[in-house]
Length: 219
Image 1: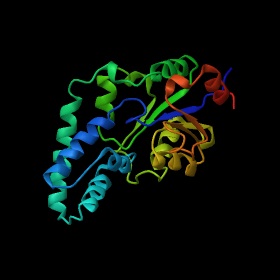
Image 2: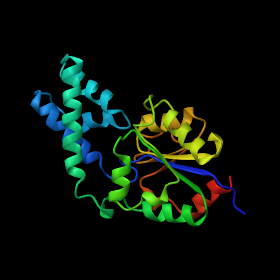
Image 3: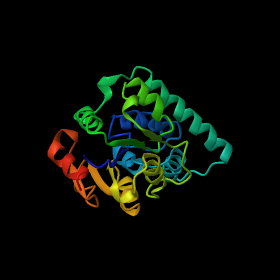
């Protein structure tokens, strides 16, 4: 009998490529404020809350604003982002993710989502994979952003596994750091040169073998 472990997935850039939609929505805000906002700047927002992301963009343009103005931009950004999600379907799931989810489900492992996104559930529903997840912890459930490990600790708790028996798939530096701080095993999805603090690194899920997953399960 294989021991049940906890496998926690970030959402944006790990399960689905919604990062491009975040970029377009933030760029529209930046353009309206005459702030240069490039793909390189967008890297600063990975794994960061919506509120903090806006502050970073305003800092780029050296713009100060009232809380009321910020709230208006935050609503505007989210509305723009949601407009891109209307037509999402299973084709948005990144390569190899379904194979890993199916393997973990077949082996009775705990599967959770740990994301800063406040739109996690609609995205999982639209892509048809909501039923894979035993627990969903998103931006509505936490008060501390990554690299604080709160989102992952809550997910592990809901899966009823100790942090040391939890494995986190992340594509951001802040997310990898959060997993490490939470005493979990971090698995970086993306460039190793960026995610070098992760315990394991894979370019994407197509490089993750069943043997590797079995090693984690039997660890």
